[in-house]
Length: 114
Image 1 (cartoon, rainbow, N blue to C red):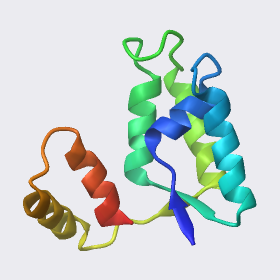
Image 2 (image 1 turned 180 degrees about the vertical axis):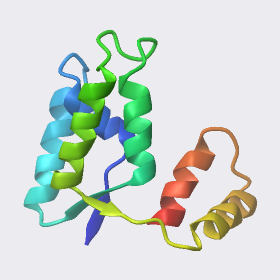
Image 3 (image 1 turned 135 degrees about the vertical axis):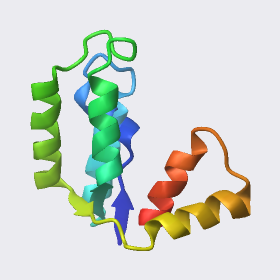
Image 4 (image 1 turned 90 degrees about the vertical axis):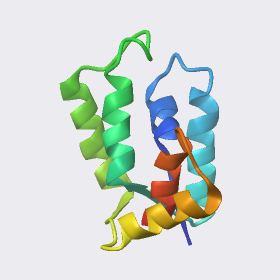
């Protein structure tokens, strides 16, 4: 069974000043120990770079080079789920069916991808 790792978990594990740093690392380790395949999507990787390089989000943002190095490391550690050809159709169906709006539409795309 696989488990999709969301952007915030990646951010927390790489930000030692985050109050969620320790718990995020522990949870990833426990999921791995349970035999789950930890995976990410390209969307998650793009969001990670966007978040960790913004000073408005992190008190100590990463440089673009550091963020790219992180993503390269993530792709070695986690499986990367390719976007299925019908991901956009599935995403639009989810948005319409559940009346999604605002930031939840991004998470719906992750569901459509996975």
